[in-house]
Image 1 (cartoon, rainbow, N blue to C red):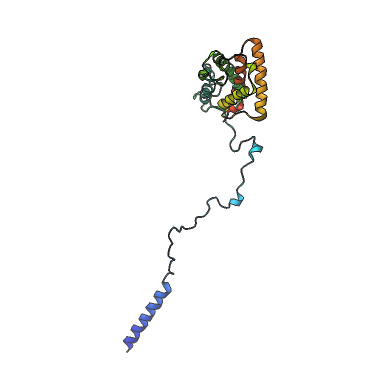
Image 2 (image 1 turned 120 degrees about the horizontal axis):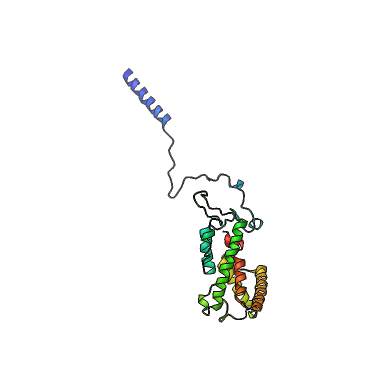
Length: 223
């Protein structure tokens, strides 16, 4: 009798112990159900918005960077149609590192760079404008590709022809076409240059001065 009572008490104790340590049943996962993922950025209400582009000169983010000497060389060749022969001899003055005393290229805009670029722009723009004036095949021109052939008195161009030329050149040099008031100012500038060039019997200079102006503009030498 005592043995049966002990056996019953042990069975009862075992049942109570198992019931007290059993973990709660886990919910059955549903198909395509994902565990919630916390936002790694924290509270998005505290993120500062980007600055207004109109208050930042039309750009947001890093400051504009000046072209390196290698980039400048290739950009002039593509935009103008010919290379600046003296660029290599002036490369160090333009900022190229010599890796002896200077180990990093200087890409800061400065007066030395502006002066040498102005000299280079005059050389390549005048030379290419002279070639374009003498070139009857419009497809082989660079600066005067939109002008009629043969290229005669540029003062007789219509407003539409002047605008077309300036839009083409600005897109070629800056990757963005002139428009609005700036296009009007450039058109006035071109017509004055064309009149002066016709007086001097040097029609190429009308194209050359526009080329020089666009080549030395900050939109050409920065990115």
